[in-house]
Every structure is written in structure tokens, then in C-alpha cells.
Length: 285
Ligand code: NAP
Image 1 (cartoon, rainbow, N blue to C red):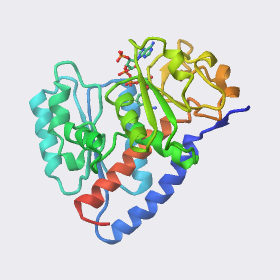
Image 2: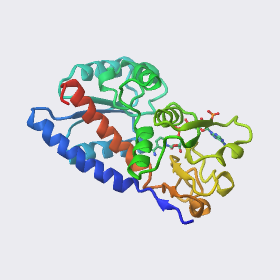
Image 3: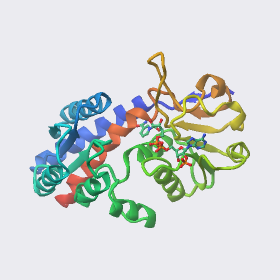
Image 4: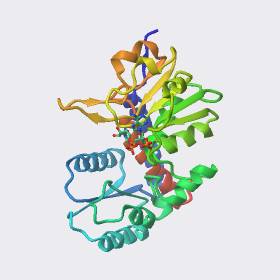
């Protein structure tokens, strides 16, 4: 069986076209979706992510603000900026690029973002809404995983989904979203015993651990759908997923490549959340 590629670039492009139409509709009603991104310090990877978010905003016709603050910015100055953005009518989404410098309490910063503008979906109220199944802005990478599955018409309901990784930003929320889609979900982590026995039962396997090429064919049953969230920089500068793509691809019904699978979906879902937030704030259906 030759694995078919789940193409995150194609899905992203299609979603962005749909969003442009929505932006035109909102703009005609006097609302331009606006995203503020806050970057503290000069982390090279963060700079790339922030530039890419700004560029995507402009491509889609969003209003974009990027606040670049020096690495020695105090927590209270950062909180004051967020308070301003919370009250700013041109801004519907606020994203603070993580990680923050060590002297700033990340939790205090996330907690200070207005829930209505929490486009990362990391605020405890957003997380709580996700857990109880209420309407909320969903964390971008997990929401992107579900969107990839749906747009490739992968049946989720009734399937056994196994998630490796239990982080707050990927593993836990993706498990909840799969459960919401009526999958039966098993979660694995670094203390899971006999992990392969569990992963070999998976119809859908989501891997988010941050270890290059960790999952090989011995983890899989034939016909599985594999979603590789991992993004690991190798010594040779290349990007590798958590799944050994070459080793497993012939076993899978579908598999996401790295790069070009889950990666492109994350920014697209951020744009989707910003649009959704703008519509909710202005009560546009
Ligand atoms: P994280 O916070 O470091 O969490 C890693 C999780 O994997 C933990 O729950 C850990 O278990 C588990 N784990 C580690 N080694 C394991 C092993 N040998 N066996 C089983 N479980 C193991 O990582 P993260 O933020 O979720 O990110 C995971 C990966 O996804 C990274 O490569 C990251 O770069 C990538 N990522 C990609 C995107 C994207 O846009 N594509 C977005 C976010 C993250 P314990 O809880 O027991 O320690």
C-alpha cells in the first residue's frame, strides 16, 4: 500500500482563498480583521514566525500590528501593552510569541489576554471551553490537524485515534478535538508502558513529541493515517518530523510530510481564528 500525502500547503491555500472572500464580506460591513503579534527579544526562529504571520495578514487583507519589544522588557510593560490591545477596536486577535524571556511569567501574560481575542487558544477559559465542549477559539496546530483530516475526508468518528505527546499546546488539545469528533482516543507519553502495543491499534496516529524520526514502521498497523506534528532541526540543517517518513510511508493510508503537512496549517488556523474573533466581536454571522 503506497501512502497518500496529506498536503497542508494545498489545504492552507484553499482555506486562505475562502478567508479572502470572508474578509471582503466583512470589509463591506466596515470590519477589517486585525491581528496584533507581540515579540519580546530577538530569538531568530520567533522572528521568522512573526514575519510570516505579518506577511500572511497582509496577503489576506487583514490589519496587522507587530510589536517588537527589547529582551529586557519588564513584565508590567508587556502586561500594559496587552491591556491596550485588549481595548483596541482595530485588533480582534492578540498573539504573544512564545517562548518569552525567563524573567517574564508566561502564564500571567497568557491570562491577561482578553478571551475574545485569544487567537492562540491558550487562555485557561478557552482551554476550559474546549474541555466542556463550549464554543471557543481553538489552539491552532490541533485545529489544523482536524481540518487536515476532514478536508482529506478521513473518517474520524468511531475510529481509534492514538496521540503520542501530552503537551498543552498540541497533545492534550488534539486528543480533546479527536474525542469531540467521536474518535476513541488513547494518549501516550514518555511514561507509557508498551507503547507500540497501543500505537499498533491506531486507525489514526498523531505524533507530537519533538524527537526526530522516533516513530518507525514497528509502531504501525497497515492502513493507518499518520499525522506528524514534529518539527525537528537536524544537524545538517534539514527539518525532520517525529515519524521516519521513508520507513513508514508504504504502510500508511495517509501521511503528512514534514515540511508541508501540519506546519502550514498552523498559521492558516491563526488567520481563521482572527477572522472568527472579528465576526464574534462585531456579531456578524
Ligand atoms: P513538548 O511540550 O516538549 O511535549 C512533548 C511531549 O512528548 C510530552 O508530553 C512528552 O511526554 C512526550 N514525549 C517525549 N518523548 C517521548 C517518548 N520517547 N515517548 C513518548 N512520549 C514522549 O512538545 P510540543 O510543544 O507538544 O511539540 C512536539 C513537537 O511538535 C515538536 O517537534 C514541536 O516542534 C512540534 N510542533 C509543531 C507545530 C507545528 O506548527 N507544526 C506546532 C507546535 C509544535 P511527557 O509529558 O511524559 O514528558
